[in-house]
Length: 382
Image (cartoon, rainbow, N blue to C red; front, side, top):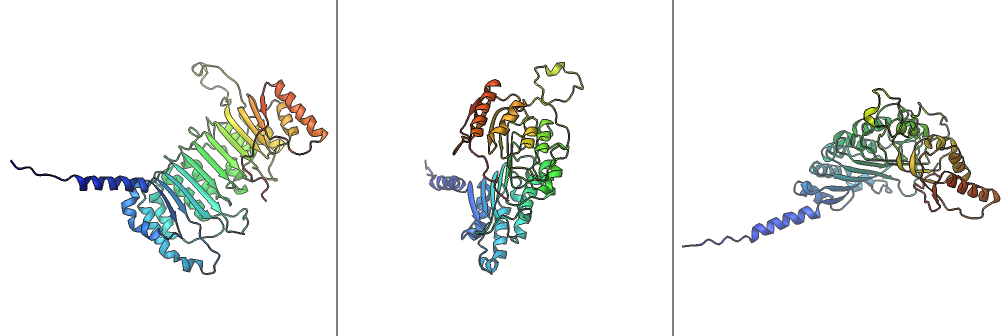
């Protein structure tokens, strides 16, 4: 009897090589001006299916006069577009780009649809060129293209969206997020919501993610009217089960001090839902777990303070303002309050405010702490 010896080694090597390739390329950094862009583009049909996390860096050095020509931008645009068209398994994407330079990437824009089809986590980060200041009130069309494409292609899978843009997004872009991102659990806007979006934010319109949204952060958004925020959350139009809320340095000096529509009053209730009549009066029964309010004025906090919350942090807010909120019975259900530790020399008025703060907390049985840190250091911006 003859035996045929089959050498399994080549098959094992090939299998191990496939596993190694999947591991190496599961997370990929791609730089528009990177030396390896051509090689990645060439191999994209092999490695594309393995890439789950993409860090896409579109920041380029534009300090030289003929930077686009020296970079061979049309060629790189084509290479990047081909690479993106083969990255069909991405679940997590971070995009870095310049806010004040319009880079012609027409082929890349067209290829984004295939790459942004099943995204779960997305971050968009804008930066300025060295020595160039923030350009308030302008827009970056590439940022808007990314967001709009993302929510339209991945609206049913997107769980987290963070937009840290130095400029403002367009109203149509915000509406796209509101209408298409139906599974969001976390939404962060920094600088992104300008005054051009204030009226849209104030509309009495439900958000697609109202059933799922748990964390909302608005940092340094001039269009983030406190009344709109309080109305949207209290009514459940923005989120029915929001757990954490951060509002830092939002609003504009021209804001009206009235809410855009009636806030839904908070009502503590233990009534069995099955015993409630068919058309009960609308009340807000959702209690926020944690809020952080920063650099907001008294009238803004009087609106936000009508939202019930268990734990609150307040920074860049005078003790006298916090005392007024507590004495007015705002921040219902509050159990813990963390504020910043006093620094420098305290005047007699400061000492009196601190003492009154302690009394107010004791009267309402609120545990208080003094070790809070700023959530977003952007309140000194222009």
